[in-house]
Amino acid sequence: MFVVFLYGKPACGKKTIALELEKLLTDVPVFHNHLTVDLTLKLFQFGTEPFKALRANIWIDAFKLAAEHNRSFIFTFCPEDTISPETVKKIVQPVLDAKDSKVYFVELFCSEEQILERLNQTSRQGTGKLTDVEFYKKLNGEGVFTWDPDKVVVDAPFLTLDTGKHSAAEAAQIISAKIAEDSAK
Image (cartoon, rainbow, N blue to C red; front, side, top):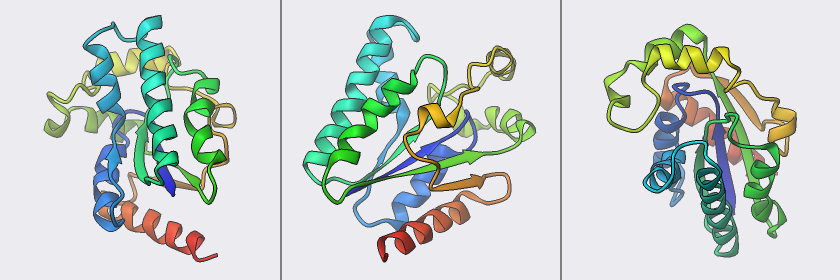
């Protein structure tokens, strides 16, 4: 059992790459971050204590049940300041504790210019994703997306990819090949 844990700033290609990767990995679905965020927003305002608690509990339970039932999946995650390092560790711990299980942390990034360009793409409209360039600039300027991976991610990234240099399909191929290589060890 394994989890491909794709993480990075908004608009760096997490979901797009996850969907391409899903095509390459047999019976490994995408558990997109916004499934949980959108559900939680139906009850609580973003960033409030009840929102953070419910979101974390859903993630923790999903990882725990997946580990118990040997269910691999691809997870997309946008680190931001409403998620503590301790929460991320609690989310992935059931997989790390399970026999013959692994979390592949894959850091995705691209230039700020590419992020600003991607925020306006029509594919992001109506998805609940961040699309407002000025709001992104404000949040980014406040350090909302600045975080220390050593404190948040349990292991060093298995792989780091510049999504500005690779198409989503190429990035998925690279990730898939690297996982296959690791699995063969």
